[in-house]
Image 1 (cartoon, rainbow over the protein chains, first blue to last red):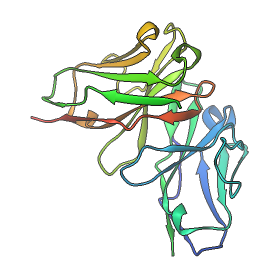
Image 2 (image 1 turned 45 degrees about the horizontal axis):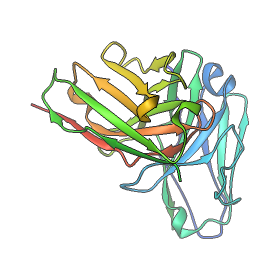
Image 3 (image 1 turned 120 degrees about the horizontal axis):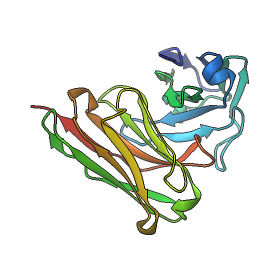
Image 4 (image 1 turned 180 degrees about the horizontal axis):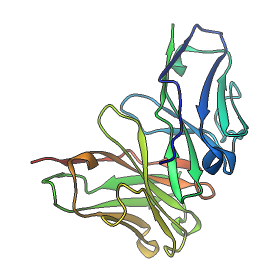
Amino acid sequence: QPVLTQPPSESGTPGQTVTISCSGSTSNIGNNNIYWYQQFPGRAPKLLIYKNDLRPSGVPDRFSGSKSGTSGSLVISGLRSEDEADYYCAAWDDSLTGLFGGGTKLTVL
Amino acid sequence: EAQLVESGGDRVQPGGSLRLSCAVSGFTSTNYWMHWVRQAPGKGLVWVSRINKDGTTTNYADSVKGRFTIYRDNAKNTLYLQMNSLRVEDTGIYFCTKAIARNDMDVWGQGTTVIVSS
């Protein structure tokens, strides 16, 4: 069963840069695009990054994404208190299923 | 503005059935792939199913394959998820989503809650 692995939690202080990692395998991240979503408690998720490193309109350029091999990263620079949320990576798998990582809870100290 | 509104969530006994609906507005649904994603209470996101623009191609998570059916009525701008043989582990919020291309879910509904319990 393919999986995407994220750290359960990350933290940072305002102004810092935080990186959230996502590890997969050849059949998912290796061969397909990675996506990143932000979710606040009680709210629907929001697309932050698509096709590895593209930002939808309206997403601040403090959020950036990258992919290398079978892993991807979400980088949040100039951390703000309002960035405190859950972050999920996602990718399609060659077995014709969609995958989400387990989610990373970001705390702004 | 693109908007998705889910409905049909309810409390049902194990083995029961439900049909979820997702009403589309603000865009032409025939131009986009669409997905269902669920989230158990206090847990992470889980992909459930997707359907292509004209409804001829569907994919399912292994956990729901053979029990759930995704389909769409483009004339009514509505996406559906027929859920049969429901299990306790199917409990959660079900989100309907629209994809930019195929898998990049850029518009999400507010979700509808399914509770499977005896």
